[in-house]
Image 1 (cartoon, rainbow, N blue to C red):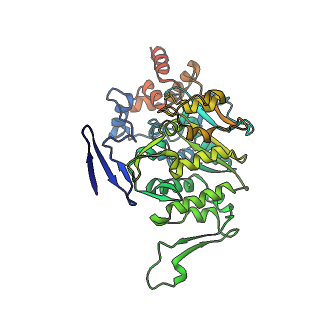
Image 2 (cartoon, rainbow, N blue to C red):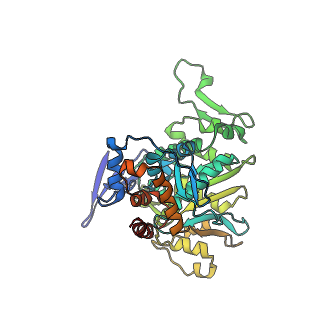
Image 3 (cartoon, rainbow, N blue to C red):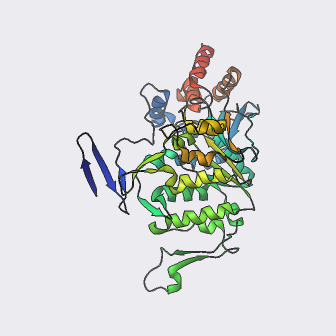
Length: 421
């Protein structure tokens, strides 16, 4: 059901949710970026849809430490997280052109470890198309292959603050039902069955059984989860009713915080989008925009950062070069300058309170990805060219590299143009 409220200067369209709260209806779709007609990606997308691309996919492997390959199995694992990296328009290029993934290993020496006495997370920064998302995927895949961590990939913030979804509430927090279900399923997909079954529950839980039917025994009306008997795998496998989605994620959150058997890896792409958009497009009963930190999923992530559990490793990648005074103040850790700021579009004190510990000075660590150098770019192109796929597909090396998402695009295209001449 939709309704409109009108004042003298503005018409606001609102969507009534399941609990009477309201959400602004936006006509634009911010999730998938529009591809310009003059972009190599546009011609590439048309090309892969045509019969011309029905050619054998080469497997390119290299031994040079400046380049890195992922196997077909690695690629299939990463494809599961498309919704976590919605802004990564380059994600299809290695999937369609090669049977594996070939990238410039330009960040192999980047210092990504951190001391919990000084830092509570690592924020990956860099220029547009510098490979921030690619590095985040590398971290994700490396931890999965080592099988030493429970992996928690958080959803794209754009989905949280602007995607239309059914809204509910739980324990003074707001829940986006479909996004929360996707999030729980992504945790399930990110980890091996063996890993999840090795984590025994530390608490007892009771949920309604969505498969219960009239005529069955009343003992089937509920699902019981017993500590030290059931596993995290069992909890993540549960199908929940709308009324219990928030309860289920709360139970998962509680179990994650008590895991001792393995380390915990937390990831999110475009993190500064979450910080900059302190308000969501959802409205409460008073038609006021709901604060982002009042939603269950972002609150869960920010709370992980604030708690700074030594068993946790948290890696967050920024989006583009958007300015956020909240993030700047957190990274700088200048407590005197923090007190001088007033709430604004660039600064949200409630979010800053999660990012920095005023007593200990613990703050986020900022690292900047490297731009690919000339030698690395030439080596990448030579490896691709040696397979013959460029001749068969008709794709120019510049287009392939443009889509590779590794290195500053403007500089890369300039170098490639000179090299190809």
